[in-house]
Image (cartoon, rainbow, N blue to C red; front, side, top):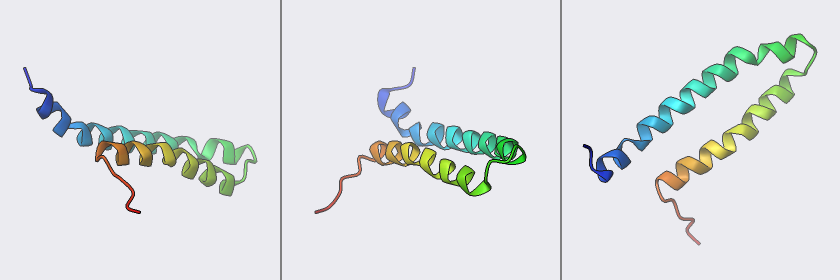
Length: 68
């Protein structure tokens, strides 16, 4: 049985795999709304907005603190 510390060290790998898979799904599906007339620019805008939670999770995983 792995210790809690060992599992915590592997969180980056799980996060990286999940992020890569979701990018792949997005890339495969983005052309569907474009073919229906949805502007490509808005598709990329939505993609950018969906990356904000991913970035926040990544920052939380490394216990990032803003310097002020």
